[in-house]
Length: 175
Image (cartoon, rainbow, N blue to C red):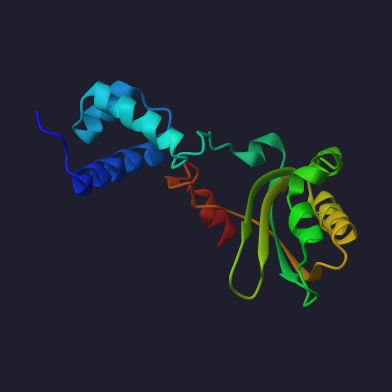
């Protein structure tokens, strides 16, 4: 059997990644069947993708409402003050994980952006009061870095991580 060309290998990776995005818990046998690959090929490709950090991890999508929580989006505009090494090392939120965990905040995602805002955090909290305390914590920890903030509460998510929300009827109650 001849080795696949680089272009074919890249296409095979895209095919596998597409299936993993749909259901990261699918068995190797199921993935192989859906992709049209052998079980061994899927296993080798997954190990390669993990080693190359093209796959960071696997996760479950949790209905936060059933946990009595809400999802919030906190956007920051960076101040015009020079962003020096002191802040570049401190901006990693792991430094203050204990503080925001004590507030009941669960950080889901963090993004640096190009646009009106420079930084967006997506997190869950029990209520808006907790979310505002988290915003205040960040303003206190990074006083010279943040110029303005915007806090939004997610009311409904029709799709998360490429997966359709199974409770799509809720949108009728919102609209």
